[in-house]
Image 1 (tube, rainbow, N blue to C red):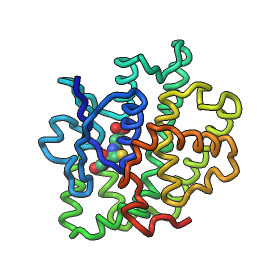
Image 2: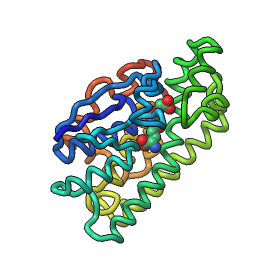
Image 3: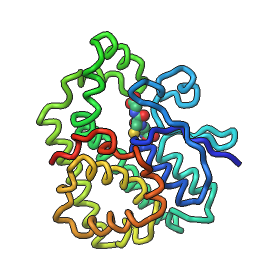
Image 4: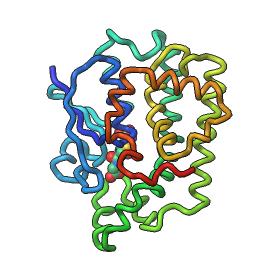
Length: 248
Ligand SMILES: N[C@@H](CCC(=O)N[C@@H](CS)C(=O)NCC(=O)O)C(=O)O
């Protein structure tokens, strides 16, 4: 049995899958893609993942794409370490959280990440290079070209921060009601959101949960997990590459 994970050290979607693999105790090899060089946009990679994004998991001959799909696949295939509730209703509630995380905080966290860190790579490109890079993106061409090389406006930054804060407030209420993990027991729902929380912490937005005691405790508990420590090997945090990122 073999697992090859095409991913990027700093990508939050990739980190979700690495955490899940480590939690399951599954050995895997990593192929690291440089997303600024466009490794994810080559024809060869798009044969594996037509969306031109990471992560992609190759399990023996099976190619699985999309981080949430991958972690649900792993959980079904390898139930010895269960990461989903035992009942259909419990699993439905877990997926409600996962879909919410995909829809709200996952896109929102890209906004401060782009403005504070990623934008500098695009500003170094010529206009032609930038347009060609945007044109080659299967999923986010229009969004990318519309954003241009100026980044998001202050209003868009504020809206993203509001969505992230709303997520954290929902987590706080849920942890108060269920706890110590989002569904009481540790599950894929926790794995789905923790890379976003790590990213916010890393880029100096930890104040978003300064008054949320339960979220703070949940995060501290996560940091003690082996799977999290292994996932965040050196180079997985933006601050380890970009010295100026931790500004509040
Ligand atoms: N829904 C997809 C989204 C994947 C995604 O957006 N990946 C980002 C990194 S977290 C990426 O590859 N970005 C490169 C690009 O947009 O060119 C998933 O969860 O796997």
